[in-house]
Image (cartoon, rainbow, N blue to C red):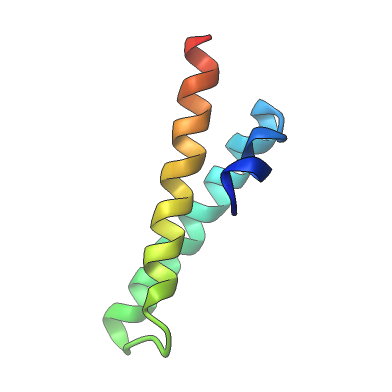
Length: 63
């Protein structure tokens, strides 16, 4: 998810997406621990998406 897409979302949508992406990340991480993923770059991308969503949420709370 790109930063420009995140900026267009409402706060409630960002919180919802953040919860979903965090769950997806933890599921993939657990699956990767059991058997290696075919594309481990997915973990990196999800981790960055979590950071982008959390940063935008924090930025809006400060304003």
